[in-house]
Amino acid sequence: MATRPATPGRCFIGRLGHGDDLLAAVEAVARENGIAAGTFQCIGALTKAAIGYYHQDRREYETITCAEHMEIVWCGGNISQRDGKPAVHGHIILADATGAAFGGHLLSGNGIFACELFVQELTGVELERAWDETTGLPLWRP
Ligand code: ZN
Image (cartoon, rainbow, N blue to C red; front, side, top):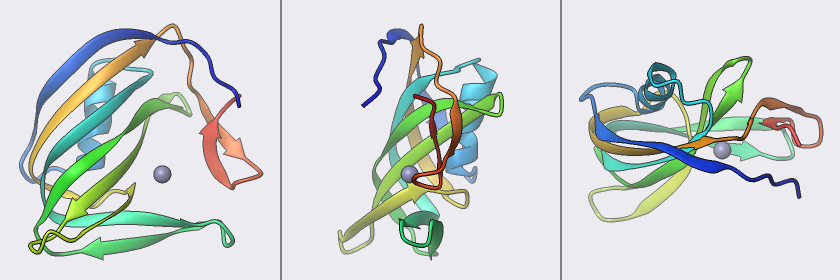
């Protein structure tokens, strides 16, 4: 385990744009506000969904798409740096018209119907992603 202290910084709250891509919209909030590290959460609804499942044995993401209208029951994750740019890592739980839920890793391709976002900046900490040989994922440097 490799943890480090961080200090809460600025908070941001707002509505993301109808028709925007969820992952790109959260990345834009981080970039436009100079957020180098932080956490986020959001709720709302999507017009289409794209989530990932990481096959640990094959070391690759499978993309699961859904063209139905979905509720965002919960979406959250973190903001760090990768190659000097904000990198958003999010996971999302969605529910369909029957209330059945499923979820996964947040990918590009999630069309926002409506979305309310909260971001908590973290200061005094450097979170840089780098390739991790053990998992095949871009994880935080220890
Ligand atoms: Zn993930």
